[in-house]
Image 1: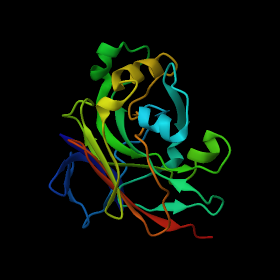
Image 2: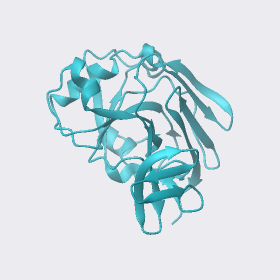
Image 3: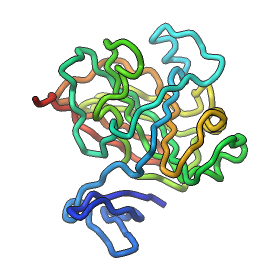
Length: 240
């Protein structure tokens, strides 16, 4: 099942996504006519793991981490599918990262790896936008529109052996599989749950394979995870 949120003039509405509609408790909403899809959950934070693919370590000349290496994006970084990514005026090196992300279903802490499926609502797609020329991860990764998320939450998929493909203006830039992760998704969720109390809607992203090249205003980014969906966003120049 796919769970989506549609932004209507009266506010966001959540429900089951079916063929361009969101079926909610109070009726059926048509995407485009009644509103646009927005990010599919409202996390208190986005917990993101970096350096989780060997090819990324090679590309960036990173050491292999002994345990998951993570950082946090704030809720204010979020944008939904088809919403623009603003290219900040203070960077000259903006890049992307197509990541699989889990959405937490219930308040939890200290979750064993084998129990992770019981606390996860489903999976979605995150684009971890990164201003590479800035100092420190917060400056690089926590700004407005740096966290495109969507298009929905897929509940009927497991995070193993999923193909990933990222295209920039139709050119394939990432082509990999989640089996290439250094730390598997259940291991990552368990590890972070020993440090943070998760709340319903929180997002945990599992890192990205190597992402050659940067993005510029006018570029369109499509990130597809097999069995989950395609997140599509365009880059625009920042307006004053």
